[in-house]
Length: 312
Ligand SMILES: NC(=O)c1ccc[n+]([C@@H]2O[C@H](COP(=O)([O-])OP(=O)(O)OC[C@H]3O[C@@H](n4cnc5c(N)ncnc54)[C@H](O)[C@@H]3O)[C@@H](O)[C@H]2O)c1
Image (cartoon, rainbow, N blue to C red):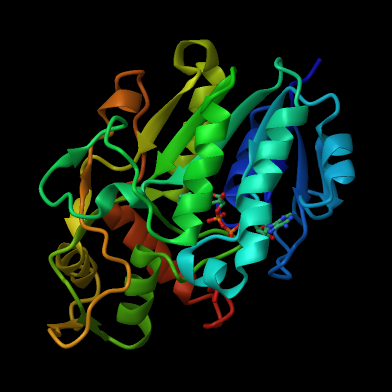
């Protein structure tokens, strides 16, 4: 019998890379997504007999419960993602990002495994120079961060759960996002050749979208060894400041003009470096570095039409 996986929000930026990878590994995959971005992520998967799609909203508990039946693994990705989008509709943010995950957890059988991604951004307020580990308290400030952390907390009170605290994700996906930092900066370099940085020395950690998919599959393969705790997932070679990231981009786009401004401040005050030792100690290693991601993005931007691929 094939292992059956339910991925809510599976037609998003991460899911659109993860789901084909799961199908390639021989899993039977059902995506449950309301297609809020009018994306067409899986037209190339519809031929696959093990691919199923439910166009529905995770706030519809009956549909969600029905979809969960008979699944071995649940991957709740459905969310309003990022602080600006969440601030536009706070009621929906709480219902989708937190309550739907809590409901899924309540109605699942304890044999159904859960893999859940949250953001590591809450580590980063006032932590300059200190490597954040999984023991570092999350102190999210945005509603996005709060709802994701609360959902994670609920999940970790139960059995058969693994959560990932993801670094800022980068790379190309059929459901593209230009509001993520590496994607955004590379797009500015590609299309405008200049950037004005606020708090250019602020650091954070990054991870390629295919390495996020790899982490999910690694956790499925190693579930019993890894279960019932959380893992940072990021590139240990890339705890980079915004300026250092721009200099990485400039290696491939030499006429990229980078300037700094003192006048404004970044609404996102994260400034932190992250240790990924815990997941690496289990044998996980990412495949894609920052330079490979920038090369990929530059190729991708020759294909895209701008403005369609941002959450706000
Ligand atoms: N991309 C990152 O940098 C990052 C970092 C940390 C955590 N995450 C988490 O990973 C998950 C996926 O993020 P993403 O980058 O792919 O975002 P995304 O915005 O591309 O994907 C979200 C998906 O959820 C779907 N969705 C939204 N509301 C829904 C609803 N009510 N019912 C059903 N489907 C709904 C959307 O249609 C979309 O396909 C999210 O839970 C996010 O919090 C992402």
